[in-house]
Amino acid sequence: MNFKTSRSEALIVLEKYIDEDISNYTSQRNFDLGPHERKNISCLSPYITHRLISEFEVAKKVLSKHPYQRVEKFIQEIFWRVYWKGWLELRPKVWTDFVEDLKNIENSNDYKKAINGETNIDCFNDWIKELKENNYLHNHTRMWFASIWIFTLNLPWQKGAEFFLRELYDGDAASNTLSWRWVAGIQTKGKNYIAQNWNINKFTNNKYRDLKLNENPHPVIDQRDYKILPIKINDTEKKSNRLVFFENELDFKIFNTNNYKTIYCILLSNEERQVELGGKVLEYKKNLIKNQIQKSVLKIEFIGGNKFIELSNSEKNFDVIYPSVGENMSFLKRAIKKNNLMINYLTRDEDKYCWQFSNKGYFNFKSNIPKILSKFKLN
Ligand SMILES: Cc1cc2nc3c(=O)[nH]c(=O)nc-3n(C[C@H](O)[C@H](O)[C@H](O)COP(=O)(O)OP(=O)(O)OC[C@H]3O[C@@H](n4cnc5c(N)ncnc54)[C@H](O)[C@@H]3O)c2cc1C
Image (cartoon, rainbow, N blue to C red; front, side):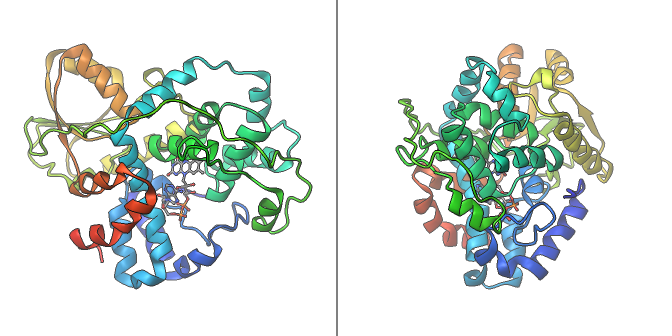
């Protein structure tokens, strides 16, 4: 698999997918035919995760060429991501608890064997190799992988979520953490996702026959309840002469960026992260940023987290493109506290509008998709 590193290339991938392959999505999307056979899905997630292209832009382009009924499933999957982001925004403690949990879990020998692909489950070992090689796994495979990790290998879901974040090019705090919780049976309490041999065999075209999996597991129990908190994001008007954005909001041009004296793009190093990333993932992010900056007429400084802390010893006011709950936001919160910063967030109207519908389950969110599409003239 060959993931692109510039917006123009990502747009070509999107256009090609819409013109040539999207019509098979509903019937074929669940098949994982291997990394060389990916036409049944879009493989857009690394671009969408970094907002090189946004969910809304994808939806608009798709619906400019196809009637809603024919691409409904694809649009709904795009909005799964929006839903998860909103869900985490409303319950940010789920992220901070996940990070805290990790600090108290040892790297057991079974864990080390698993991440080295040394288990006695062939498909799992293959997926470890595939993930490390391509920094991507098919959605169905992510579900099987997580289920086997939790229920057959008896490993903590948090370590699996950490491993995915480290290796995936599309690693995202909301989609990843909440999907792992969903497989474990704590996102929808008591409903775990169980990987079954017949299902894996069917959707890999008979690749894996005699797997010994725990097909009767109980869901993971987690007593913690998360109350919905109001999203407190202040103004969206320009207030400072300094603009900051992170690597997960790379299409910064959609904001009014013209009148800033200085613009910084921050990529956190592993020392500045709570969940470390693999070398290839950091390199991928670096290349995305470099390409975006080079193509811009604006002068943008590419800095690390330490440099931002240093700058904010003297400068206290920044406009920041809202990075959403996750690693970048946690870093920012630490910086705000340390240096007493005044941050003014720039947000997308679409995000703020959609996130209000993440207060309940996806079924409820989904029923609002037509409203969202028409409000933002996406259809
Ligand atoms: C355990 C687990 C961990 C996951 N971790 C991540 C992650 O870190 N980052 C991430 O972007 N996705 C994650 N997903 C969701 C999903 O697997 C990927 O978004 C999808 O496989 C990306 O491939 P694609 O672009 O070809 O998707 P397509 O099927 O072509 O879908 C198009 C787009 O819709 C969105 N999307 C599709 N399915 C989902 C879904 N189930 N949840 C959220 N968004 C979805 C993605 O942005 C995707 O690019 C995870 C799923 C599971 C089960």
